[in-house]
Length: 256
Image (cartoon, rainbow, N blue to C red; front, side, top):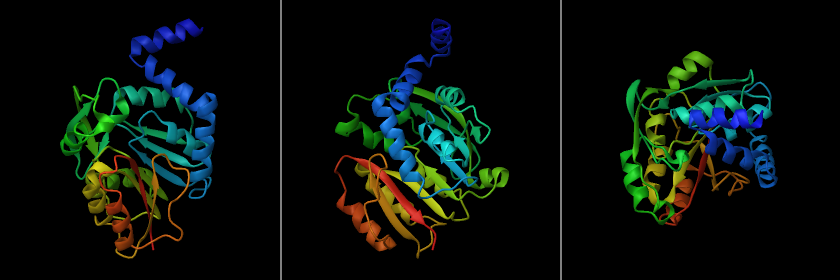
């Protein structure tokens, strides 16, 4: 049975990422990681809430959200990643949308490094910046795929208004926010310190209101950096202090 499954995964071209994901989630360290993420996100969502996981990648966060009893819309344009999500999250409270998310409906080019699917991006600007960073010095975005693009407003029209929207799409976060007209109760978007200006623009992108409250995490979420949450001007200052530090994180935005 195990050899048959391995053969099927090899033929689908996803054996290595599935094996890596399995070890990351169900190995000793993987279980600790999953527990950390579950504890962290449990402070924001409750059973039956609706969550959009935009840039779901291989579905690690989707699975964490689903384990908390929320309804999850997992949005991912990379077909290899989508296959893995389908394998790992075959549950009734997960809906999968195989598309990129941007400011307008249409199609676009997804560029992918063959060795590291989590770094696929629609942003040529982000790829150019990342290629100069020590963190990504061995990466080469040498694969390209035309993918459909939907907006967050389209997702809301189909699935309903989410309590929480998580956006992690490698430098394309600003574009995704421009396709959203209603600020949710909670929103997060990834930032890379090599491109901190994009993060600052996201903070100032409608529909984020000027009196929202902000927080952030460094690298994978385990605890918020700020207590209490701060103003827009203060989060901009925090982000500016991280400039060129060659790391990443997420900004969290709470609706006033």
